[in-house]
Length: 341
Image (cartoon, rainbow, N blue to C red):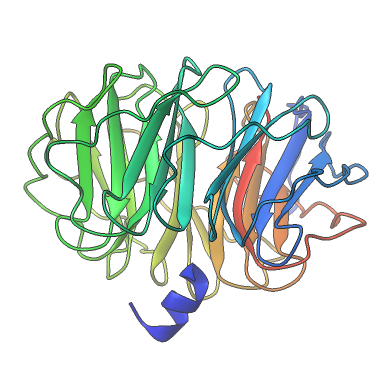
């Protein structure tokens, strides 16, 4: 990674579909490290900070599938904090008995909400726990570990597989999942070309996407209990290192946040890349890190470097006019963003 990369890791349109999302949360640098707001086609008044703050820079954030819990991965021990969520933060759950051993970089709940996974920057690079309103005993590490720092983690929509994006070739590792890791799947025949920074499965589970350093910055493969032949690169590539990746809820679009202006690139998706959508009229103000669609697919959010640290746009096969910034901004660089279900 370049020094700049390391610093990040340490048109008018008519929109007929209303947003029905209740909340949006951002993990960011600088205390309180997390900011959450009511969301209804715009930011409401910021929720009070959690009584027990995360202990370091917020890197990743996720709501549980039921929306009753919120998890933040961050850069100091205990590296992960989870809180009950009900239009605000409840009392922090007890830490897991076996902590992630280093900076938490990303966090994901399994689709049934019964497990929580944290990627982190020292071996074993991924830690997974049973979840039931608290951490259970950490699952055994995979027999074949990821080969470098874990930066992104995702379960398949069925919950039967788990993938981690990481530094060091092959840059992506995937495993069967059934209350524990199965035998690692074979690497893709065509590897991502640089450090894996994030990973996402399509809503159907039929594709897996990796955001990575080094051109073409994004690699997508068919997925069926293993990697298929890599799809052709988009005709218009992201402009630099891919940092965050997500599919729209319908699976009809794929978005990647990245280094270098324009900081966010979105493409139609149908077993391959369509022609890149036009850039938003008002760009994010710095390196795009986290990216998320709202559950309805009516909005898209980018957490980024530089104030206002979060930019959200209406989405309907293209960017609408950027929503107004929240009245109380996050206090530092945005690294992760999530909408509540």
